[in-house]
Every structure is written in C-alpha cells, then in structure tokens.
Length: 603
Image 1 (cartoon, rainbow, N blue to C red):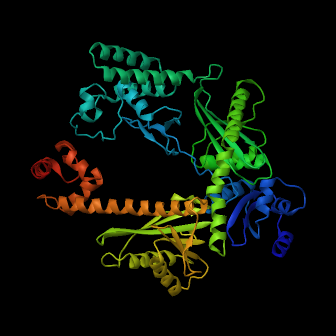
Image 2 (spheres, rainbow, N blue to C red):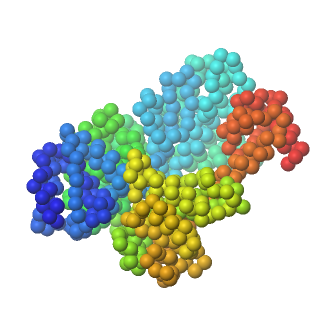
Image 3 (cartoon, rainbow, N blue to C red):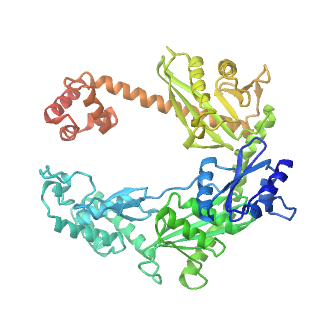
C-alpha cells in the first residue's frame, strides 16, 4: 500500500484511464475518469463502499494510468483495454451474440439480398437485427418467392450466362442471363425493401394463395412450408406496437442491480415493430449505476450497429455516449430518458425483464463462480501453487502413426474458456509418432513469444497444463529449464486415474472426483483434446482429398487448389454436378466431365 499512497499523491487533474493491478501484476479492473486524481482516490478513501467494490479494492496491489485529451477519448481507450485484458471486475459480455441482418446495396444495378452479421459503413441498407424465432433464411425465401429478387452473387456481365433453376421456377428474373431489364428489377427491389420495412400484406396474400394451391394439388409438404412462413409473418406483424410511430428505430436498455450482481435487458424495436430482446447477467465492481450502464453500452455497441435512438435510464452519461457514437459510427444517436408515454412503457418492460432475469439467474451465477473463479482458488490451495492461476493454458498432441502431427493450445481465464486466444500448431521438426518431442516443440515455440512484440497476442500464463502423466511433465520441464522459465506453474493431468502431477512432489495428487477444481481441469483437458482432434481431422481429410485428386488426369496443383477452395470437401466435389464443377476456375466443361466420370467408375 506504500506504493499506492505515493502514486495517489502524483495523480493529475487530466481525464484518462486507470488500470488496477493485483499482486501478480494481472489487470483486474479498467476504468475511465474525467479527473483522474478525484476518481482513483475514491477507491482508497475510508468511506463505505458496495460489497462488490470492496472485493475489488482488497485485491489491488498497484495501479497505472494513461492521460487522454478528453473524456470521450478515455471512454474509447477504456473499451479497447477491457477487450485486451478482460479484467476480472469489469463488465464482460462473454455470451454476447451478434444477431443477423439482411443486407442489400441498392446502389448496384441488380442488388442481391443476403444475410450478414457485420454491419459496415458502406452505404448499403441493413434490416434487422432478427431475433426471437425469426429465421433470416425464411425471410430471404419469402423475398425471392414473392418479389423475385436475387439471393446469389453471380456477376451480371456483358455476356449473358445460362439461366439457373430459380429462373425456371419463377423465383428470379435472371438478370445475369439478360432476361430482365434494370428498370423492372428495380421495381422488384423496391417492393422487397417495403416488405423489409414492415409492409407484409402482399407477401401474406401470395403465401396464402400458394398454400391453398399446394394443398389442392395434395403437395402437403409444400403447403405446410407456406403455412409456416405465413404464421411467421403473422408473429412479426403482431409485434408491431400500434401506438408507436412506424418510423421508430430504437433500442431500449434497462439496468438493475442487487448490490452484488447486475442485469441488463435490451429490447429492439425497428419500424415500430418489436424485434425481440436479450438479457445479460453481469458481475461488476462499479460504484454507481451510471458508470456500469455507460460501460455496458460502449461494450454492447462494439458488436452491434446502433439505431437512431436509445431509450434508457437518465443515470448514464448522455453527452459522453452521444459523442462516442459520433466518433465510432459517424452517426447521431439520440439518448432518450422517457418519463411518460409509450416509450416510458417500453423502458418499464425492459426493466421488468432485467429484474426477473437477475432474480432467476442469481443461483446460476453463484454456481458458475464455484465452477470457475472459486475452482481456480481451490486448485491453488490443493496443489500449493505460488500464484492464483488466472490464465491457464492446456496443451495436447494429436496424430495417427506419426502422420499429420498437430498440437493444440486452449486458454481458460478465471476458469472459463477464452476461445479467441486458442492456438494450434502444425508439428514441423519431429519425425514419427513422438508425443514427447512434439510437446517440446510446441512449448518451445509458444514460450519463445514471451518478452517479444507478440506477447500482446500470447499473454504470459500463470499455469500450463499438459495432457499426460509424469513423462510428459518431465519432457516439458526440460524446455522450461532450457529457456529459464521460473515464474510459470506447470502441471500435468493423467487421464486414466485423473492424477495430477506437479513439480513439487514425486507422487501424484489425487483430487476428489466431485471437487469443482478437478472438474475444471477435466474441462480444459477435454477442450484441448477436442481442439487438437478437430485440427488433425481437417488436415488429414485435406491431405486425403489432395491425394485422390492427383489421380485424375488433367488435375494439377492449381486446379486442385481451386476445387478445394470452392467445395471444401471430397463429398461436396463428388456430389457436385458437371455444371458446378465446370464453373470452378480453370476446370471447364470437358474436365468437369472427366472428373464426374472418374468418380462414377472408382467410387
């Protein structure tokens, strides 16, 4: 605490970001401040604090700070640092989903409609997000069935192409085959856009007509498909809030807390229609609700495109967030604090959802703590580890008879999988099936990144876990000694008896099979095995595919690569038609016929 007291005296009056560290120099919290001196000192005053803040303060051993030009710059930097360090006490949207949108670029001569999960500032139109049981593929199917618009990316070139099946069954006017003028297709696109903006009447009438016709022809499977699509449109229509403007695009965000845990509910309304909603359970260490809500909003919109309006609580930092949206999205987003009327009712609905979610999920959160953070603490105690194993890395090797040898590295942080940090290794120097030597190569390559420019992507682990027994542990210990690694813990987990081997004892450690710490080790070991096996199968199948293709006359290296790029697997190449094979770069109709003939004669 002497270090902290001295640093507190030196804090500036500038805006900036502060970074709290534990005794192992792990980043445990990142916050932003309008005045660094005032904000950081609040944590160390003797005044009473919420339990969740006290838990964090007890773990602070040091802090750093970065001065910024403005508070909005501090907000952006805070968001980036949270993504980078994933601090234990910050709000982390680990289960956040990116919902699908339907995209169309109406500036094109013959626009295509398709599904995307990434919204860009490219001038195209995006409709959505779609959630709550609405299937984007069904929406696209309705667009094509009702308005005859393109769902493919086939180029419309000067030379006409051959019409595809969709043209012959009345689903596409085939502009690529020059069967449709630009003006006629533009009208189709206009009707489709009107539908996406909430005008479902024409589509419903056509689907009902087709359903009755299919039923009359005893094509009951097709009639059922039309009925399901009609019902989906009815559900979407029912979500329209009649007292809302048809032009209202708004997200409604409500935050609630019980002092230890928090929850947020997000309701999404587009063109006056409720698209759906999602709740998030949070554990955070903010001293006030406004700070927590502001941080949630900045993290949420790192993965979602904002609407023109956000209806939320007046405790959030309005001016700061509106500036954040201007800088990040080059868009004016209005924050509304509705006190009455239908918008206030929407906010009340979101708040009720958040409160119920918090009440119903609190036991799950506590159980999750037992399975993750508390399991890490218990593992430290049971094995006598010198440091809390916040970042754990587990390694496994996979091969068959020494062929296509691969290694996997999976990462768990505070007992939870961090899949963005997973890495895989193709063994380069080991001959034959030598798992010990393969482990040594993988660990040497991984540990060589410590202290280099690549350490940002390969953060230093607290604990390395090896899938195996005493032999595997000794093999990796040799690499530790060669590279003078002394501040990373090392253990192995043998599968047969689930024995844990450490560097501190000759004998293995047996952990009770019901203990959460063992279950956590098993999860990370099984995940490393799964990740290695998946990579091995991909390599092995690709190698086998290449060997099959070499037997076909006329298929050289470039054409094999083109087929692999387009079809991805041998099954898809075998199942492809001559026309599909011929469309592959460098193949053509004659060679496509040769390929089909080869598979017919040999498979």
